[in-house]
Length: 264
Image (tube, rainbow, N blue to C red):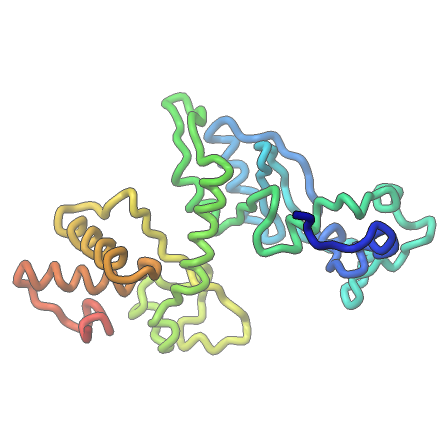
């Protein structure tokens, strides 16, 4: 069965750039040698400390440094080139084939087609799956599909699992550093105009929490989540499971320990 589409003539007449936000004018892609040692990987961690830098890894295993910056000729309002059709426009841009664009499916989409992108925040989670031998050589790391899964899980936790304490405007001391947005210094109520992103709560279901009773709570939370609902495992599940473990051991459960979780 033929897929729906437009005619060859119409496709030829429509310039794909007309409906594009021009990521090619807003990110520089610099090829970088894939890391093979701890120090080479640590250098990438160093690069990611710069606010405009990210790393991209392709399906073929090629690495690139991404510099998020705009071309000086870019018209941000119209997403057009101010020097288009003039001699000032680089030949690199003039010769670019917009019908085989690599930028648009990878930078104008929520789910890049050919790459996954590492940022300062996601690198920490992704790098937990790296194995290094006694000589500092990398012996294994997550493949492309596993890496994308890790990053998708990060997005789910980072975007949807917001700290209840910050939503209530609690202080840094009462919320705790593990639930504060990354780099947040506004813990007096989160009413700043400066946008902040909540730090993800990362739980690897393949690695139970350390300690016998903690492990029981971890397992209990996971089983109740998978057995009763299809929703993602959240901090609420863990709080309730830990509360039940405390009660089983005869330990008192107070609101100061678990917050709103003691009311369930």
